[in-house]
Image (tube, rainbow, N blue to C red; front, side, top):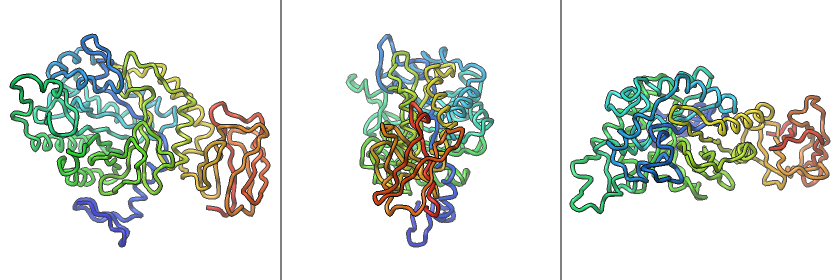
Length: 456
């Protein structure tokens, strides 16, 4: 099992040699610095577009099979003809991620429907058998070509596999919609142990055949089905043996904290980081590696009827808010069945990217706000520097940075100022009053840098 050794300063994972705190910090360093990633939900469900038999479904329509109660064989047969990835789709994803300022991409290698994007030797419910291509390989290759870190989402839930249980798991299954049929026992002949063996072997396929993977994003567990039910310790140890540098989330275990404020519950034995979903914790998760995963509209998979898009301003401000609280922002995109990313998504991501080109240093490689809440915006930090993210620009152009004790010296400038002019920094008993430079306002978030020699 994985044991945290607080006294010896080490972490033991599976049967592997103990990982010291310094080694863990080194392994996590790039991820902590990244602050921004792109999530991609794409599979057969993308072809359904949130509709089944003429009925429109709301919310996360990657669950349409479950919502509509569709048996596996019917689902596969209906959607197979409509899932036709175009050539070069993966390159388009990678280039968009790069242009938006993301450092990594996490894509759905297999979602709950059970369809594998790789050429699996364990099932014919995969991309190679459906479209004659290893889509997983295409995506990984494209991401690497753009210098991006590679993350893979892997669902433990599998609605296609004949051994994945229908009842008493605390997890969803399409056949739960049919439990009122007389004499119907959907779990007759199903064996969870056989499914878990299959799941472990699928995880082995993706972690041995595609080179280095940077992130493995498990999804998900319930109180009834978690940890030991998945043989999680064995699985994580095997993955780490094959991929020593990999970073994994904690969803092999029940994570009741992902949608609420109770984010202090974190056990490093269960994964490297926790994942609040559709939620930015009010004060972050101090002392814990965390990543807020959020949709761009109301669904993860592509929907033909959901137009509740976040604005570019929302994306910039979320990026800043999350970084100021010490977290990463994983923003989702749901491509069409052919792999095309809708122009609505592209425009917003490119606008975020334009902001990141100018102000990215105030996000990447920063740590959480060390000063405290301020009424005018957010703060991130680097050694000797504070980045002042001004959302509400005051009429008198002056903001108070309540540093205590007040620094001996302070200088400032506006990021994005081509003249790089100094701005006034007045050291007072209650902190530093910074006078922002008029004309250097950004419509989303403006940024000033406060230099504090000798302060860490």
